[in-house]
Image (tube, rainbow over the protein chains, first blue to last red):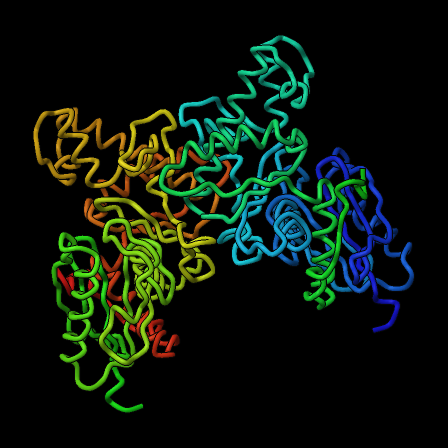
Length: 316
Length: 316
């Protein structure tokens, strides 16, 4: 192999920003950058911005990249961004995202993060587990037989919208009692603000507060999470549950009470261990790098890499 | 291949009875019989009864069977019945179940039924679906990428014990608000008897009754089922849901209201179609036959078979 194909371009597209990087065949992150996602400029502008970012990243490398990996939200197949409500996409072919004449693979954002946690992070060597990032919203990556599983049509993993409280509050999605409407970082902040009248309180402030209203809101979030994780455990029987996203930064303040409630909910089987995610905000970009190497027909790369990015995020 | 290896022995072990048969390499059911499960005589007696039944079935065939497939409850691997609470088993090796010197494969009872529905029944050609038999209890077979999936350790599919009503009634398992405690055939009968004071009312009578107490009990069962199926759909994104077991005999009286509630629960995605199971009480035995042919190293058999046993059950 020539030196010109010893890295891939990796890009993780979020609703507000895009995290890009160059990753070598030994897992070294040669470069990482962040750009805003120009969502308000419309669907085509976002595609153009991705194309430009990929071109820029590739040009920053030494030679020609071996492949491109791209993580995007919504419904996605390996070669098409089928649908993304928040970006306005419908059936965007992979080729539209790249100016390069190298193989590209697309992946679903959360499942691509789950792939990274599976190959490089908290789930290394664990074939069956749940990766649950808790941020503005909640969606899970179900790792089944060592690979992220998206269901029959790619709509799987919507654990944020399972009805944990059947007669509960209405979610922004229109359904009632969804996990997300109680336990996402955004919901914890919103629900506390509603009760206390204080605007703009962030979830981490609610978690740390000893105000009875804050304790109540956090308690309901923990209860909702433990119900959803009990359900996941009984259905999917995972080896472990990996909690990530902004809310997981709360550490023991999240893990300990959720674990206690989960154990209590289950009577005839053990609860799986709960673990914090290992890759933080870089999971999506690192997963995209793994996709890039798969696109380059090097799916064997990854398991041997040593990645320790938790202490110092690549992209912040 | 000699004529002496043109059939397998298939056995489905339930808590009260065992369904056995001989099934040819073209899917013909050459023989089917039923015997009681001598559960009250203890764990070893059940193993001995299985051994005797398999010997009897094999001797009834023309020559030597190519393999044996055995479906059992509890926690099971391909070569060991690891644990079965209701039969008192712990780590019974496959060899203990058979007097024959031919290959044997064990399978979990519900997942073996799901395998049969997948290869021969309502899920033919559908790689990702849920098979949900509703009987005395409720457990599901999750078909993922064309094969039943039991989770990391084989405890998966316990949809009967997910908490659909978090503050609901206590289940026999000790948990609260389990699907099974509202919607199994046994629970529908029990809950109606409790309210009406009438003893021994069967679920099908409750379904057919216009007594307001019966309507209420059935309504709660339907609500519990629709919540569990909404949760399954959002998590696993199945192509379809196949309802089986005794309660599915209610036909449209079950399928129609569950479908209506499921559709209503889901706002941002479609509900998968609900279908009645195709193989009825024979699913487990037919699945065991497929395992028998896998044991005989003929996993290719099955998909080409034509099985239409619904109108006239093989074993009743």
